Length: 75
Image (cartoon, rainbow, N blue to C red; front, side, top):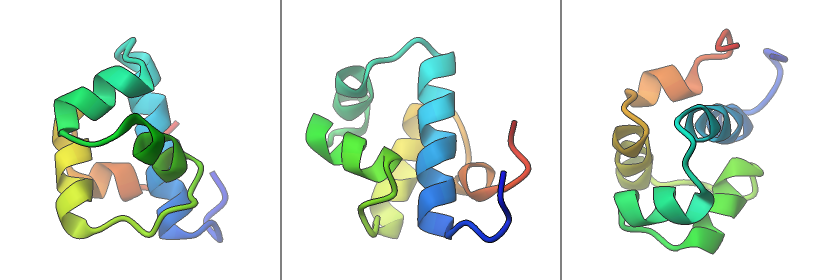
């Protein structure tokens, strides 16, 4: 992944990869994290400036730590 990519975009890309690896839809992830499906889509596209609280909820919903979803070396 491009190391010049913003943390917001990296988080979204890694969130999507992890969600898909778990076989979850955006709706499934939204329900698990207590958020709205359209919010998930905008986070995954890097369009949203996500709060730390929501990052924590999303990371937990895919079984990861926030740091892992910000890692630019994730496959």
